[in-house]
Amino acid sequence: MSDFPAFPPDFVFGAATAAFQIEGATHEGGRGTSIWDTFARRPGAVAGGDTGDTACDHYRRYPEDVALLKRLGVRSYRFSVSWPRVQPTGSGPANAEGLAFYDRLVDALLDAGVEPAVTLYHWDLPQELEDRGGWRDRDTAHRFADYARLVADALADRVPRWITLNEPWCSAFLGYANGMHAPGVRAGTPALAAAHHLLLAHGLAVPVLRGAGARETGIALNPDRVLPATGDPRDVAAALRAETQRNLIWTEPLLGGRYPRSEDDTWEELVREETFRRDGDLDTISAPLDFLGINYYTPSVVRDAPYRDADPRTRTADDNRFEGIGMPEARHTAMGWPVAPDTLRELLVGLKERYGDALPPIHITENGSAENDVPDSGGTVHDTDRISYLDGHLRAVAAARAEGVDVRGYYVWSLLDNFEWSYGYGKRFGLVYVDYATQRRVPKDSYHWYRAMIAAQA
Image 1: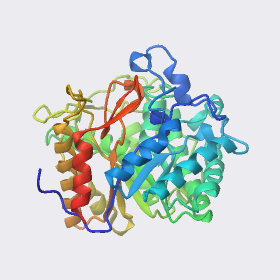
Image 2 (image 1 turned 90 degrees about the vertical axis):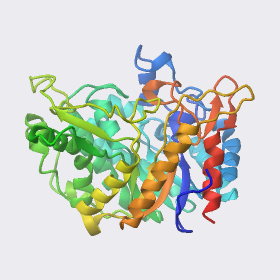
Image 3 (image 1 turned 180 degrees about the horizontal axis):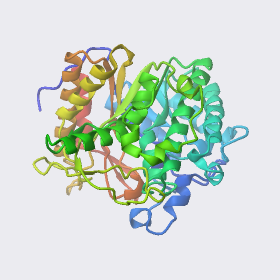
Image 4 (image 1 turned 30 degrees about the vertical axis):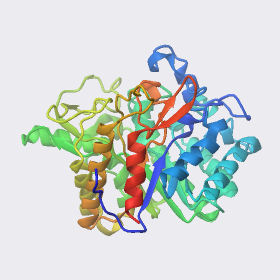
């Protein structure tokens, strides 16, 4: 492809990973146990019985991965810090050996001319905190602020961009509503409490990070572009419930300083009986952001549906009278997700229309596709579908910028094939193919395409 989407010289191109998905070394360097270590050992929880014990062995091989980033030409690398590696039980002093790993990684990135961007929480809660209630317990938000201080005191002198939480929707709803992710809980109001406490944790961490010298502080959400299946008022109302669960529960408190007006219709008894919100929480949660991270992969088309469980005493927080119907006319990735790049533009423009000047600058903190990557006889992966996906979504970002949305950066998910949560090692998102048996890294065609696209902006 000879032409590339065009961006200004100061636009930040990057790549992203997460600690549990790539580091391995789960029992080394004083690291404690996380909820994902525990969950992955639950029979049937993860495809193939896979665990993160080795993953991509990044803990040992990070110099090789930093060299890949340098060759790729990205300006920034977004990685997450493992909470149990820094604070094995989720409270108390820092584990010096764990912090030293991230200290070495940051220095290696800077030596390679790559700007580090740190995510503090990418789902690996220390198991001891979960044993005390996890995100259902308000105290976990305060423990997170303590953890943020430990990491920021060690790294904020060299790390300019900080993300408090990655996709809190997944933590709350996949972790505590439908149980598909760690810790594997299925609940109603407790899942909504987890959502609130995640937001509170973010709000408590923001002044801590700024006090330690962080120049940019934000959060990474994964909002949906939700579309009703038809113009029928019932489907339109179902789409609003879906948007409330996926988007508004996060953006309204963060950007509007309020709870969604549509929450009563979405959760009914579950939210009306809540006791987890306190006076002053919204002020803490809605502290101004330096940027908003948006993780985006695919849209949702939904229609009206009855409750799966008619009894509110046993109903989960993701049972909100809508169901997804998919987009059969679209190409689908290996995850089964429809590819519709322009919906990213629509999402970004919609955020600008809803929040106006309250919307901070945006970074696309994740975007990418899982494809059925198979090396050819020479060991090369010709992932043309991934190249088409990235090209289309980058063009959608450029189109949103042309409509006045202040998007300043884009991070591909992911640099490496990795442990894909409950899918184990069966789904590959990487620009770099990882042979898990040998840990050999092989840049795919998409790696070379992204490298050429970045070089073409100069």
